[in-house]
Image (cartoon, rainbow, N blue to C red; front, side):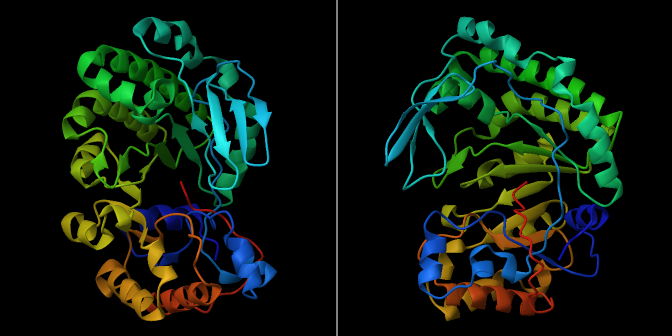
Length: 372
């Protein structure tokens, strides 16, 4: 079912709008559609349109706050198993075609302050960052109920893209001024771009991608978040709020529990995907923070590979009456994993809709990822 921007914003702010939202954040992993086809899944089931997933149309504002390097991505070598390429950061990357959806960088453009100063112009403001014609079109879409997002470079993720995780974490201790200069530059440009966007339409949701944690916890602790990331986060969030934003959503996998409080202080009010395999528990977050923050995702994707009894136990725990009423976007915590039988997935959808008081799934011929 299609949601409009007003409903979605109210729901994420913890208000009850008369219904719950049940969706998919991502898509099936590579190979799962073929598994489902062999099990008799219909074409619409493989496309996920058969399940009546909730969605809100959500264009990203037609403006660029990220790097403009002038480097044209190109393939260097391609075989049946992998692709090696140069990306827009100038990094040589390698993608395993049969096992991955993300290419791994094999080198990085920044090792020192001098390296950063040579590419700092990638993040300079320029009016060419703004697509005014498309923004005017998006203004009409917003007036029709679509949610307008604005993405900013991750405070951890963007320096990580430039330096690599190990070098970035070392720099947090040995050369914090490098990280500070990176983020100050990115914040200045992001705010100038947002001000241009805000002159045309309302920014509804400020989105930031981090992916800064694994099962062992985050790669920055509360101290680094507060000292290095908070000035950046607060500046871009305050600017976005001035352009109407009410949601500040953060995408990070892994165990983020140790830094949730620090990021709330940075302005984040929606966290996802909340991975149970890393120890995240959306029920525990609701008990601790109430409706002051929203959670999207959080249902254990791996349970779908087990039994219907286990699926029921997971959903009855995560979809209890205490979890309903606003502030939770019910969804799996990431890609639908390989090995999930189509029968289990059908059961998950049916039971989830029953527990949330939603009507039976109706194929509306559309599937929209809710990973934002």
